Length: 422
Image (cartoon, rainbow, N blue to C red):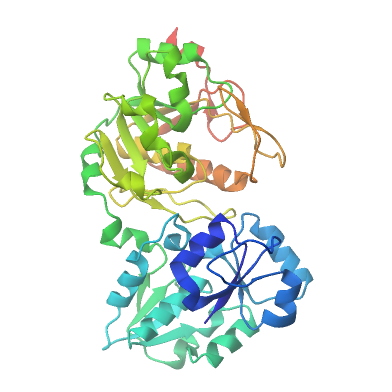
């Protein structure tokens, strides 16, 4: 099956790199002057008039608004990018997913694909290309148009009891497979099964600080240089992130662990003089920038970032960081996963203002400056990630406190920073 991507921006281009022009025939975008490999750039009205035989994949940030627009226009043949698994959303192209899926299938078996996302369709497609008997569960798709297109293109659509199958490959975010009999495999969270993503060197950090306490220092406007000095004076273990280096000229404090996942920040990471001369900090770097994954320093560890994103579902929390973290819309979430993996059972947040929560249009403030938001912040995703961290912590005897001065983050129990060091 072939698709049209709605949104020729960053996320749409990521998806295109994964699927290529073999499966993508055009882009829908308001800016008809953009170019993506000479593919047609069309308006939504033009799509409805001339291209509607191809289902749409909504790739831009505000998916809910996109769904509402399509429903109002009577278009029901569409998919959301966040319904697909992580590799479809990676910042740069890797062949790991396609390679793993094609190698997984065995010609002696029959497979039933469960799921309604583009991932389910692509698993079936790559399985067919491998010469395997692959069937798609017809009940998984809401749109009759999509079912019609799949049948037209030769996919084998069946209902659960129509055939005998050896394995069910669950390609949905949900893990409820109670309606199915037989061997069910999770084929959604594939990053954790694909060995190419593994980072074995980070195993050394597991439970390294078991039973200890730490601070996660973010860069919100409430952060004070004096707070950093207090942490240093009291010899407190700390994690920090991204542009915290802008405080380095004003304090001798340095984080024990520096965490970065944002591919934009990492694009200038190698040229950063303050970070390059820091030999004491351990750098934990997500694999979101291809150049940063090469020629690593001895105090630098690369780990995988799993791009499973749902604004309306519970964010997953990683327990084995040799398999990577789960993206949560904020690097603070990565720090929480790292801290718990290392065994800290008393974790304090500082400078996590979350001040843009509930605000559609607001400048994003840091302790060093205020920036104008260039994109809608993924506030619900971030909020749900914090809730996931709290839930996981409470189930595993870990305490997370918010020592931030003010702000809007009320998920964690509040404590007064100054009273901690009286």
